[in-house]
Every structure is written in C-alpha cells, then in structure tokens.
Image (cartoon, rainbow, N blue to C red; front, side, top):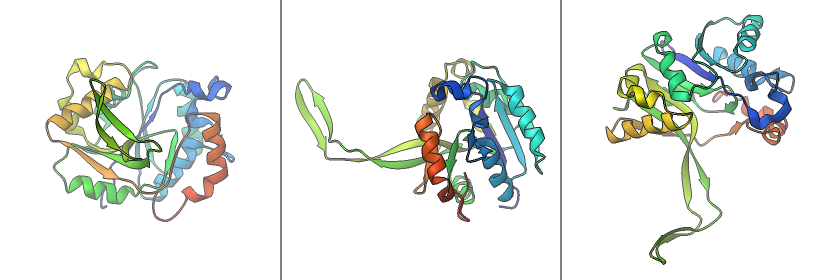
Amino acid sequence: MASPPTILIMAGGRGSRMGSLTEATPKPLVEVSGKTILQRKLERYIGLGFRRFVICIGYLGEKIKRAIEEMNLDAQFVFSDAGEKAGILKRLHFARPDLTDRIVMTYGDTFTDLNFVDLLQAHQGSRAEATIVTASIQNPFGLVDMEEGLVTYFKEKPLLNYYIGYAAINRSALDLAPPAVVELPDGEGLVTFYKILIALGKLGAYRHQGRQITFNTRDELREAEENLGSFYTDKGDP
C-alpha cells in the first residue's frame, strides 16, 4: 500500500447505552485497561502506516479534539463537526471537502483485527464505489418464511452475514447520494445510500473472519477488558 488512504473515524454519537459513563465523556474516550478506546485505535493505525485522519465529532466534540491534541501522535488530524444530531451519512457527506479520493470508514467505539491492506486491495480490484465489511453469525434458530399461514421456506440454523460498520469508500460515491437522503435520520440515511449503490451494482462486500468487539454497553466494555490482548496481533488492526 504505497499511499495509505485517509482513515475516517465516526466519533460523534452520544453513547447513551453506556449510561453514566458517557454523561460527561464521549464514548471514544471511555477507558479500556488504562487507555481510551480512541487512543488504542489511533496508535495501532499509525503503527500500520496510516498518517491522515478525519475525525467526525459531535457530542462533546471539543473533549475529543483536546484529547487527541494531548496524545502528541505523529499524524495529521482534521476534525469535522456536522452537529450532535447528524446521522452517519450526513457526517460523511459533511466531511467530504477533507476527504482523499479513497477512505476507510470506521467507528470510534470498535476493535477488530481486520486486515486493512487486504480490504483495500479487494476494493481497488472491484468495480464498487464502496466495499462494506461483513462477518458471519450462526443463527441459533430455524429461519422460516410464511405466506397465508403456510410455511414456504425453512432453513435450520442458517449462517447469516451482517455489516460490522467498516467500509472502504470512494469519495466519488457520495455524488450518488441525493440531498434528501443525506438528511435522513441516523442509520436510515446510510442504509438508503447503500441500497442506492446496490441498485447500481456499485456496493461490494469483504468478509472478515477474525475477531471484533463493539462498545455499546457496559457488558461489552467488560468483555473488551477481559479479551484485549487478543485484538493486538501483527495480522490486523483495531
């Protein structure tokens, strides 16, 4: 990877499911075993050769800016603030003037050993405007389709694919999002954008088969503290 792309980190949400931990602290600044989630991510990315970051802030954004400045990291940081209530797609679109032609989007509250180099190679080798990262989960129940009270399909404990929040995105992909879609509520806008790309045959997928954890609750935070060591290998990054 001769010229690493910009890493865009979504760090503007309130993190309300963390309870009192995020009343005065933005979720990316919650500590895990002595360091904030965000610092662990940034140090790892920089160690892998990434040097330019766009941080999409919102809730308590000034605290995130100040914290990053105090880290004294060897990298360039640009802060983009679309407002506390902005959805993911709006934050992405608002940051567009600061984006390079190709970016990797991630969240400020997740760890994974995803191989970014492999993801970017897969994206560049495709016709996709965006490539989302997926993982598989075994559904513990049978999957059933019904019509007028009769079962039309049954599959026992299927293996399902789900989106884990990481994506390689061309800046040009944002041209395909109409203003009305950009303004949709959080979650809905990004999903609609991806559906537009699907209809155009421009959304790729990259399957991640490694480890991951998301910090949405106190229980997930405790799980991360118990398993932190397994996220730091030479194969990938958080």
